[in-house]
Length: 179
Image 1 (spheres, rainbow, N blue to C red):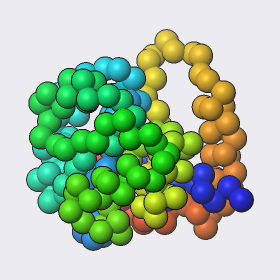
Image 2 (cartoon, helix red, strand yellow; image 1 turned 180 degrees about the vertical axis):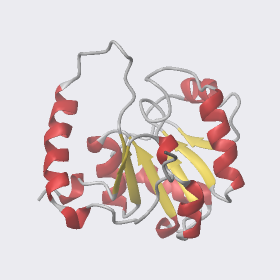
Image 3 (spheres, rainbow, N blue to C red; image 1 turned 60 degrees about the vertical axis):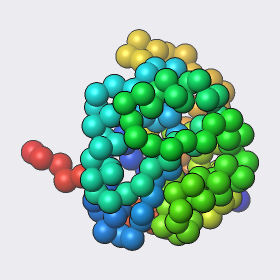
Image 4 (tube, one colour; image 1 turned 90 degrees about the vertical axis):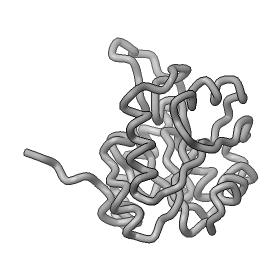
C-alpha cells in the first residue's frame, strides 16, 4: 500500500551522491527538483551547486530541472548552470516526468530523479516508472515550523526504514566517507 511513497534510495543531500557511480550503473540523465533539494526554497543557486552540475556533466550525465516553479524562478536559479528545465510541471502528474526524459533524450530506465518531497517528487517518479532518490530537505538553521505534509513524510519514512526490500534498490551510489 505504501510502496508508491517509498524512494529507491534515501540520501543526506545531493552532495552525498556519487554521480560517477550512477553513470557506471547505466544512468545517463539526472532529473532534479530545485527548492529544498538543491537550495533552500526560493534561494538562488550558489557556487557549490554550480560546481555540482559541472561535476555531474563531467561524469557524462545529462541534467534537467523539473519544477512546479515558473520560468522566472528557474531562469534566475540556472544563471550559472548549463541545464535544461521544465517549469510549471504540476508534479506529481506524470506528464512532466515523461517530458523530462524526452528532453534528456534517453529512456526512463536510464534516468534517475532526485527530490526532497515524497508526495510530489517520489510519487510522481514512481508513478512514471523512474528510479528516484529522496534527499533530506534543506531547511534554514533556525527553521522549526514544518507543515503537515512533512510530518506525514516522517511517518512514511519510518515505515520505509522497516521495509528493507524497498531500500537500496539502485545499490551503492554514495560517496566514500573520508575519515
